[in-house]
Length: 173
Image (cartoon, rainbow, N blue to C red; front, top):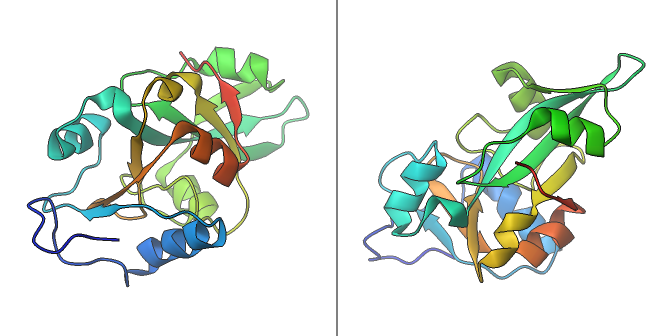
């Protein structure tokens, strides 16, 4: 839910198709959360953290990769990384038995998740996306993730991220 009058609130974006998809998915998983609509776009973990008055490590940064299998086929891979971490793509590939993990193109990100870069949410995708969740996020009581638009974020927890994404807990850096 948004908080009218909240200094962080912008206009209510809950009717925006991408944000609505996230809110529907959260409701299907019985998640009650706080959604914040920010006055400026927050396309990086640092920008989101600054806007929320928290540290980047409290941001669940949604990073989309192309997971290349040994047979050459490719599948989308969503890594929910603590905003303070860089993802070790070789490590992730090895842990997931993939030939390689490569950065997805903006077109792949949009196709696989339904979101533009800067607003990729952990849920609300057109089809399930294989997901890993950075174990470092477990050190925070609450974390914030993109809610489908570069001006929106929602509050959640590490355990909730694992549950709603069917994610695998991994040390990503």
